[in-house]
Image (tube, rainbow, N blue to C red; front, side, top):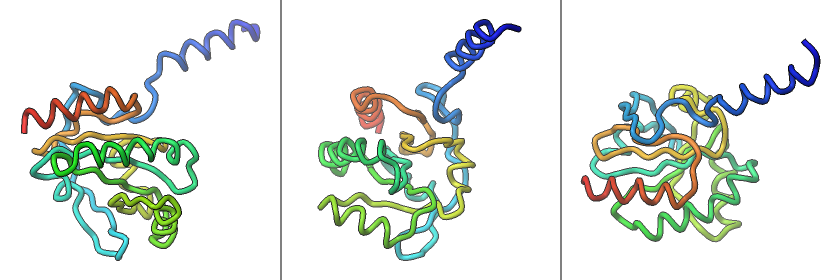
Length: 164
């Protein structure tokens, strides 16, 4: 196969393949698996317990991720705008508690964050890149996972609040 045809074939396949997480896209509900995360204090919590009783917005990020830093301002805005109606929190990939604390101190903002210290949470949820966003219904169904505009994410969250 000559190189222009090979390049076109590879480009076509790349465009057709889904980007981000394959765990769930909008409208394709799946239950949140039984997995645990670490608090910054080192305690273990079940992710399903954190997400129960109200819709949750989870921001999968890493302190070294430049795109995560750009998106974090939108996450802070979601947190402010939705207040107590939505649980907004982050899960940091293989970061240390002191790194996360320094990250938020520098930005003079705070986001409840948990740690995936060994990558098992990202793996169980099919998260392949940072940042990835996930919306979980109040009953533990993942209603969105992947990347999208924050406008679209707000619409999904508003729909979840109405159902709640």
